[in-house]
Image (cartoon, rainbow, N blue to C red; front, top):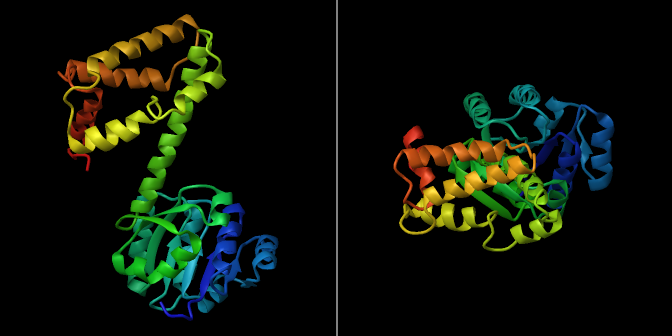
Length: 296
């Protein structure tokens, strides 16, 4: 990219407005939204120019950042942009879409000479506006280099995760953890509350460094699973036993179990397959067998 970089933004909702704020601090900016009032508010906040339509925005920009609500909307916008973007331009997809979806977009962009990069946003609107978010970046090396000035304007912290679609896959995985953990936390909090433990005290306990919330990530996934080290530690059969105790406690307190009940089945399978004496991180071996891929 040259010093005359001309970024554009399509989508001026809550996240898009924060993206616009970040971009306008570093580059002259053009914006478009089907809701003209939203585009006007971003322009008033940032000094950006409101484009009357997608063709005009594409003609005025070298890099277009997308912040859109659905895959279908993203597809329609990309199709219009490709009719008007010059060869050598680029699109950055920050909307949360599936990795297969963005790879299909990449197949449509390539014949037009337009680079495509996915830059999923790890945190929320306030973090984006402050520049403290993390971008999860996927795409070809040359394409990522091409849009680096725009990525740098959005966030100092960027995780380069792999080919096109990798950023979105990581974002979806992150959200899956977040949403599943929310259910597990509520189940566990209700379970221990039924036995007299205040939720506030339980939450404080889980915030500790060696708690059941952090230890599976920092020790078992990062050290044992990635290192293939399942000797010693807490045996899978002991984890199964503790899981049984949790289900009994929930039953006694009449607390419905969904996620924790489902997780228990994994320990039953692992013990039945001879992993009982391995550290319970060895349940990873089940997924390696099921998928035919090792965790790396």
